[in-house]
Length: 308
Image (cartoon, rainbow, N blue to C red; front, side):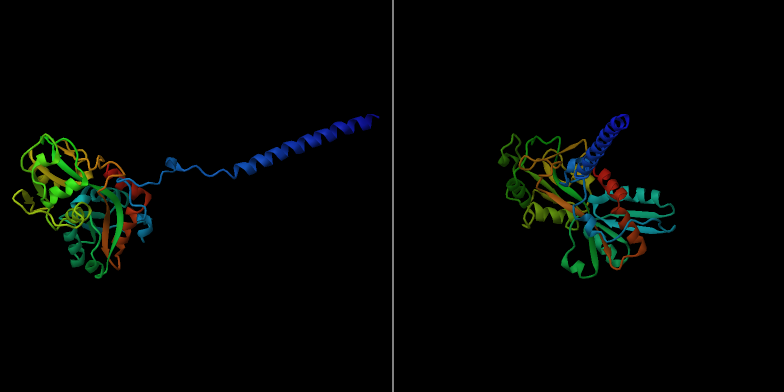
């Protein structure tokens, strides 16, 4: 009888152990069905401070593990990309000792001409390539998304926003007095325009004016150089102009003009555009290295920081 009584507890212990193992296996299998956590809350909507969603797919160059000492990269082009160019230059030279990146800014079209002439390796542009430029072997890689902001001086009595129709009217010349837009301000609207060589000028014409011509009346001033600082100084109490948002976001003397009640910080802002790096095929090793770095996680982080 003692042997039989000893067997019953052993059987019960065996069943208990199998039960624990079964529960553990079931819990493990259920956990494997849980989807992975997405960093950032799963919001994939791009903002103006992040590269376009297709920028990674459009960049054919891989981030370089090493770059030969003595490598030089010449970047020319859009004034809208000055801060991006400088930030990438500094980070690239830091990460790859013995390299040098030079940057100049004289407008998107000028940068493209420099690449075609062989006096620059990469053009920074705030507009897409034209068909005649692409036909010469040029390729464009999206780098970031930017907002074109309308801007007035803080001295300007005009303190509200514009509709898209009013913005078109001002820059095509059909609205010439501040009183026509329903604000306390009055008097002639002075429009400070960028030169045609400017990529921002070309994109503004497409985005804001729907490809209509800029006005050319007495209230229009065409700047000789594509430079934002002289434009801001020229605004005075009655002027209005436009610039890449990153260049004026932290300015103390001017303010941006909301469009249809939306400011340039918003993803819903109507005047968003991609920024590009343009190169000549076949790309040189220096171009491959710099553009590969620009598309790397470190490069993308650098671009985003430059736009804050």
